[in-house]
Image (cartoon, rainbow, N blue to C red; front, top):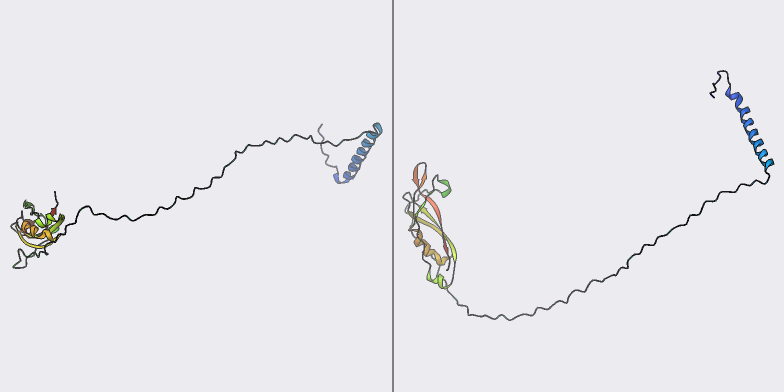
Length: 202
């Protein structure tokens, strides 16, 4: 049932009346219950005790292993060195000063990387292995810096780098090399060339 609120109703004026009417009704209802059953008793509800289940987890026993002690330090005993064969003493020849092909006049020569067309080797001469170096079992690499002229021949040896025992043989072999002349601006020009020589025993 829907009750429509009256526009003329004054709630503030009827609030106290309605409150006391509700309280009186509640008291009368409580007295009536006591009169009907004076031994009525209200038991407080007790919570039901639920069993607590405790599960035990079996933890495997652990074994603590101590680290092994370090191995004992072995003493290194010195061993006497025994020479199986005698060592032969070889005396190298005195240093060789290269004086071949002295320049009579100063010539303006270009470096190899400066020319348009570098010289090509036409004749290659290998130096002889010096007997003193062979007996001493000496090996090595030697580089000879030579001046290749306009006609392709070696005109001057500037310096020789490498073991001194090979320098004389390299100087004799280097002067026999022949090249095609280097070309710069469509004309032959002198140029410095480095010649490598390798001495190896078979």
